[in-house]
Length: 166
Image (spheres, rainbow, N blue to C red):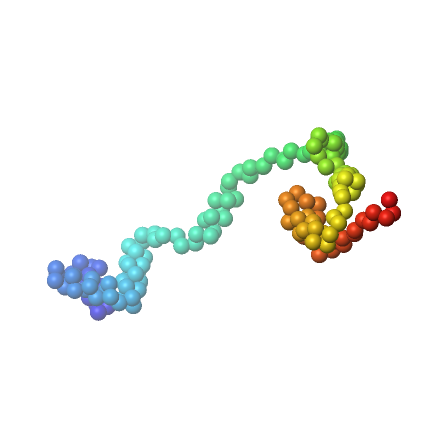
């Protein structure tokens, strides 16, 4: 087969032999390698220069000839900016907390508000006179919307007021 490849390269084969040899070359990697070797030998005999396969050396020489471009320096923060910005952020934080605490309608003192509510209820509440009404009051306070003792009904102790101490 090597002689047929050589004959193909020299142009000595006829039409049907060319087609058959090319079909065999397509199927066999070894014969394609022989084809490449024969091409290189022919190029060397004719004095033709082949492709330069030393790509790394060409890239390195191209990099050596290129001019070096210097990147600009990054912009530095001015020395006084950092402390001034920190102070401004702190002042903004204090202002936000003060605004939230002193805003109208805000519960700034939630425990004090509950204490006022509890004292107002104590003064106006009348003690139920029968145990049946006491159970009703406990159940109502446990399930009433907006009640201060939601879910705490099992901890409530009912106290009956007697008319004797008055």
